[in-house]
Length: 370
Length: 190
Image (tube, rainbow over the protein chains, first blue to last red):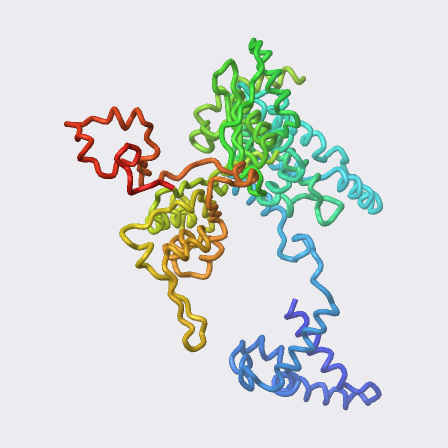
């Protein structure tokens, strides 16, 4: 790019000096003389600061006139104002740059994840339906044919089913007492557009996806990640796709509380229903255990729940009502097996031991949904 | 929904304590109360943390100074002008404001820093056991007094005095100041 610019500048400088209305003999003489002195002239007189900087490097120019030279302040001021007028540099896709190689990027994507994709499937997974439509209209003008069906719509649907069913199976294995509402809430949290887009951006899907819109929206990133999962299950094996989901999608639960993800609006009512289901006729009773500064803004209350004069749970809060609600929440998480004393979900090599058992549960979900 | 918000609610809450100052040495009890005001009774205490508790002191009128300090100990004050020095004995100081001595002793036990006054604002002292209801509702715990208050002779019942174990009884002629007996001619109880 810079070399081209350099050559153009040289040619222009020479062509300006050649007079147009002259006899041919004189023209030839002038051209020969110029061809001899061209390089020297360019080096000594025509060469500006930028060209010399490219040739010689920073040597002798970087600190010309010292670091606090008089010309530096006004020059910087002008550059700063020009930058303000021009505004920030616009966001551009990575494929705009000349050193972009899509084939090698796709190859590197598979190698980075340490997976053996079928290349055709992976390429199809990165094509958004909107891109396929626009590409066909472009190629029709030239006279070429383009297959619209080569997009990731079918793959994305399949990948979504795999991903959701696998997470359901995993949660059913680790939290067998958790009701379906709670499981669905966690599945929705893990597979919503925000968290899936976060994963796909960090894997590097954002540069590879072929779409009509820019910047790429979260929902397209989500669907392409589903498509990649489906492509993995088709090209290698569904178990490999399950491990991928376990490593990338389920790990978003690290440092997060399941009880906070599933928002229960009426915990006391749910607790009473759950106790009725298990066969308890008596309802839980709330008792004040401890309190300080009841009349102050920084008050603290501890309320305990008792079932048949046996301790169930306790909760804390700034008022007795909030403490009672929190006690009900504590009782619920003890019932569902998601309390704080329970061990966190295993990841990595520890989780590999249980993959067979989770896969057996997964097949039940798969068959029930179809 | 906001479940982890109340996770450590009680660790960071300010606890309200009650302290009965009846027959207590204010110098010793000042050292005890200063620890509660600073929050040194808590495992989360560090020098910068503002985790002090509230202390409500009752019966500060009935504190007990040791030896002859009521008479000998003087509180010094200088007005700043010439001949402005005043020395008020402890008994007079206590008569003017019965809550003042225990406040002063806790202040002396606290570290001499500017935040000392804000810690002292959490010390509520009442001369007797009449405490407003709003304050009593806040109290949860009690600080153990260092000295057990002794029982006075007037607090014993007559049966207890008569049944008190004796080796022998003095004859009536040997008792000079029998306050309640017949021999009392000189002394009279007002």
